[in-house]
Amino acid sequence: QVQLVESGGGSVQAGGSLRLSCAASGRTFSAYGGGWFRQAPGKEREFVAWITSSGGGTYYADSVKGRFAISRDNAKNTVDLQMNSLRSEDTAVYFCAAQRLSGDAASLTNKDYWGQGTQVTVAS
Image (cartoon, rainbow, N blue to C red):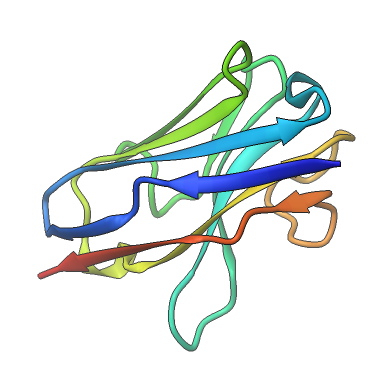
């Protein structure tokens, strides 16, 4: 079992920055790919960013490329998301996810664990 807890959400003006952190406990998190998804009010949950178990591979949604950066520290069992140049359309609840087996990082249905989410609000 892996427990994921997100932190770092909050409110920020457009153009600002926030850093989200996902802390994992339980089984060896270094064996899992990890990433971030988000869900805005009235919309489907969508892929944001993913990092492989080793940290050697990263993937981003087109909407956040060049603005967001995902990283992980396997010694601390954390996956972070640095969000820069935030826009009002980035407003959403952000969820951390973990996946043991390789596969489509952007898929919602193949994730083994999810966090409870953290709210990010960007004021225009």
